Image 1 (cartoon, helix red, strand yellow):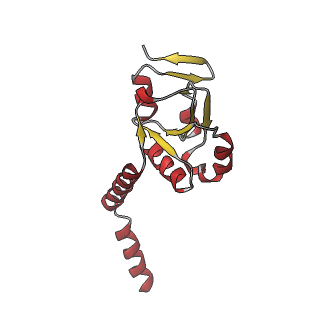
Image 2: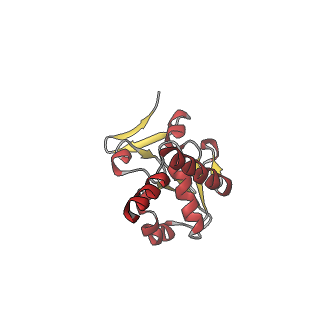
Image 3: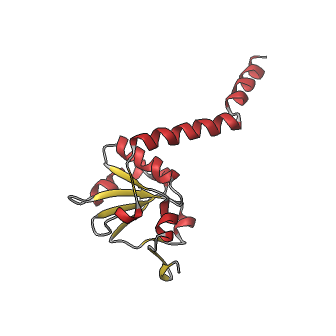
Length: 144
């Protein structure tokens, strides 16, 4: 009997609408605490980009910049030291994903860990829409 009560309680907490609402609240909270940067305001020479997409997404291309780390969102905390070692004096850290949500959450985590990170507003999609180059194993590309 207690097992069934516990299962009912578990299923009520896993309600899809509630989970979606909780996720939206998480994003809202992150948006309030993380600075977002517009594509037009990026400095490609003085920025450490952290692409937090999954490996299969990264194959499509990364931002063509001086310094880019590709660290999936789920491994970010474990790569903390690599990120610290990659930050140069006076450089900024910018996280990005496809559309912005994972980049926002990644920047929030890095900020919580003591790294001043920003999110690229609109992600790599916004970068490409604004004429930015991407690089993959085939070369460098720009949307025409």
